[in-house]
Image (spheres, helix red, strand yellow):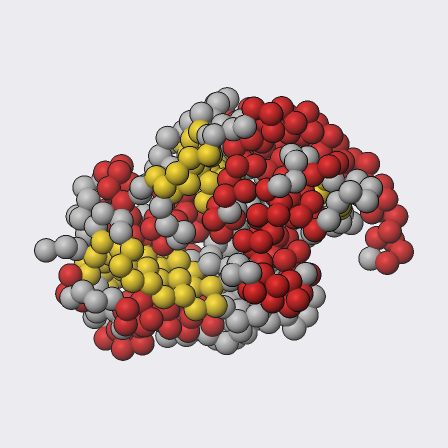
Length: 474
């Protein structure tokens, strides 16, 4: 009998549900976009109504409708949701107010009750767990940010000052469960809403970046993962809870293991989509007439542009960092030679050079050397982006089979919890498959090696200008 595992990946833009077989093969999937965020006031960014649950339930129904096997052969479901979200619940587990997005200013500070009927404060995974199982339990490893959690023990802190600092009471917090352990079982009501079998074990994972890393097979400290998503980050793994460093230590997707995360790029691949959309419906129509998508045409055109984009540099601060709110993104170096393909390539090159700089800094802090680079996220679907990454990092850039690493990582956790595979290492070996590798082009690598120093200095020269313009036009 083939055993199947469901991976739920609730991301920043959509909820995706994938059914995998025990060897990691995708047999069914469903995806439902999230609705636009509700932003009723400055700093307030909420998921409207019950959108997280509604999108997950709808994506589950689509995946289960596409699943042609016996539902009785599905043995577990791993749940991965967006990190940093905050859900405020009533005593019965219902939402007291909309779920606060990771972009909401309130989640970066202590909790302050805005209603009289607040009984629980939890993450998005805690809320969805309750909807699926009726249990007040949550994944320990999804508590990134402002929570009274002891990052050494993966449990709520014993220090009263932690609760004062976070504004939360111990009785408001869910029971914590480690990755690869069962949170509860799908209730009949949740089964009716999702199409998942009633009684199916729901398994804890971790924060979405750590689950994505697991789904890419990231178990070796000498491997770097570059995640090309809405937020771009570099990641590696280890066994120490490091503090006092510029790189950020997160909980990992395996109990007792940690995920180290470099500085990243906010609105990273969003910038690529932004440029594509600027080209308008005419570009889309022209590409379609040629039997291509706009992205395919842009990649083909940009592949013919030389490394360095004829001197055009992209500095990717389309969303300013919190410590430099005046900063703006820049395209520097126009001289009449460049067209849209140059702009597109320069954005991809800017992403790669920025991440090389930031992951080099992380490697120095961790006193390690990365021997290979795995690339994941939507941006990894571009062969050109993969080649530029290999050239900039001067390492082989590796792409894994499938485009849903977080869903695969969630299914790996479910495989461990249900005994389909006896360990995380064996589950990764069985369920993560390499697709292809891109080797550095020596000529292009030499260009980028020289250009990186120029790119790294660009913000120091533009910052004074943006401070002045911010005082005038914001």
